[in-house]
Length: 144
Image (tube, rainbow, N blue to C red; front, side, top):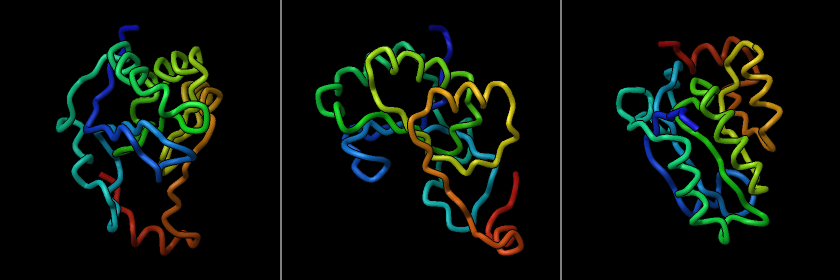
């Protein structure tokens, strides 16, 4: 495990980012600039600190008895799909421990082989739909 993630912050006892008690990892970096963003401080990928996937797994495992069997790990942000390759490594390791995985995402990405692999390793997607009407959505979101 040599991949790193740009991490903004953590929440060790999350109860609103998926089912059960969750270890929530907030990643840095987002390609959107949403008018009503709750995590504006995660937009800049330079604001995060690099964390090796191996080190993050070891930290998460300290909470294993709290998050299993009905909780798990949620990766939020920012936009987690900007760091899809490292998330693949993280989720492969979490699967070895039967830990539920979730991603909180805008879903604003083109489907490619990397994203497809990440989808196959993800138990739950929390999709942040900005607005059901495309024209209204454009009023709420600007791209960097």
